[in-house]
Amino acid sequence: MTEHIQIIGLQNIPKIKKGDNIAQIILETCKNQSFELQNLDIILIAQTIITKSLGRIRDLKKIEPSLEAQQLYEKVKPLAEEKRIPIKTPHLIQAILEESARVLKAEHVIITETKHGFICANAGIDKSNIEGETKIGLLPIDCDEEAQKICKKIKAVTRKQIAIIITDSFGRPFRRGAVGVALGVAGILPIKDQRGKKDLFGNILQSTIIGQGDNLAAAAQLIMGEADEGLPIIIIRGYRFKYDEDATISSLLRSSEEDIFRPSSTEFFRNILKKRRSYKLPFLQKEVPKKIIKNCIEMSRWAPSAHNSQPWRYLILEKDSMREQLIDEMNKKLECDLSKEGKSKTYIKRKIEKTRSQFLESPFLILLCLDTLALEEYSDEERNNNEYLLGLQGVSAAATYLLLSFEILGLSACWYCAPLFAKDIVKKVIRLPKHLDPMAFFTVGYGIESNVKTPFRKGVKDIIINI
Ligand SMILES: Cc1cc2nc3c(=O)[nH]c(=O)nc-3n(C[C@H](O)[C@H](O)[C@H](O)COP(=O)(O)O)c2cc1C
Image (cartoon, rainbow, N blue to C red; front, side):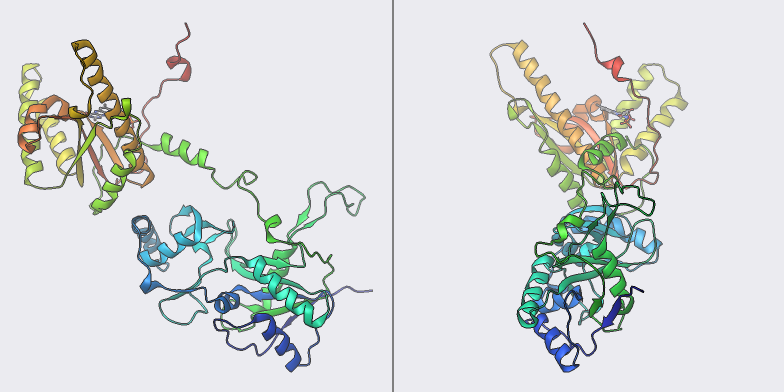
């Protein structure tokens, strides 16, 4: 006895438009071709036609890119150019973000977790097989529900148990080539649990779970095709499975806790904390949009501060004559201080050239001040001094948040104490109000070197004091 399955492409499916009833179209097409559906047939339907019937189409021209989309675009564009793959516009990236629960990787491609829990490129958004230059197709909101609706309607007419799988094709990690995957099911479980069954030698299978939904989708893909084959509905006949009214796609999706490849948010934050380095090398000659800097300052607002005083204030210094005058005057003081200390002329010259280039060539130079008006006033000096220290601690917390925000957004930065040693000069040149006390400079831009040497870190046992 032989066992075989058939993969049948349903011919002459009309072009699908918004509002079309896919179940009706399947039934009519079968009838016109005198093709009789049989019990336990599996109908595999390309997601694109479900998308079209639901009108899940967007026009890129009508999408307003957010700051996040713009930032992702800046990051992905040069990498895509390097790999010679199509560059996603900020509009398309915005659509991807709106369809995603989170972005997992943004390199030359953008891999996200969709709101359904699928992990795929571009949140499954399609430009192929969608009419119109600027139109894109989104995945159905609930693929199981669409499969269920079609399943019910077909069952009501044929009185047969017929399973439905809505399919798409996804690229994969580790292997080249897109393969068919199941997005939504009705009547058939997406996985077939073989655990507890015996293998050829009578051994009990401990962990074998077959992804039958994806296997069937991949088989259907052989004739459904990726390009213009135009067979969006495939019937698989002869595959033995247990009909299941309660099937949903969720059993196929591995949770992030079970997934050893998906970075957890804990891991992400650990990496950010460990990867941040003080960047003291030249910056790339690449424009940093000021709104990105403002976005990082916005994030630093969430730092803790004593009595929630939030005493931090920022001045964003652009590359202009004022910055130049400021650095020149600060350097004059530095020269004076170093001469007083008896440092050699060569040493002083080198030091001054270094600070000049560090502070003048940084795309942005941020001055962080302590606003003394935000501090509480006490009747005695000791408490006032302590309050000032609390203000400094708050400013330092904000500075740390700022550096971490830069790191998250792929910017390189360094914290410099120079303004603290030239407070009067900074106040005079920038005409700072009296209550703003200059505390630090931050140079920030895109770094040329991504692997800055990690300075020595003390061990945990060296910093926890046991009494
Ligand atoms: C309050 C403060 C002031 C700093 N001032 C300077 C500075 O004036 N010049 C400098 O080169 N680095 C400065 N740094 C950066 C330190 O050198 C750097 O944080 C340290 O070497 C550890 O390196 P990492 O930040 O890469 O871990 C400063 C850091 C802090 C927190």
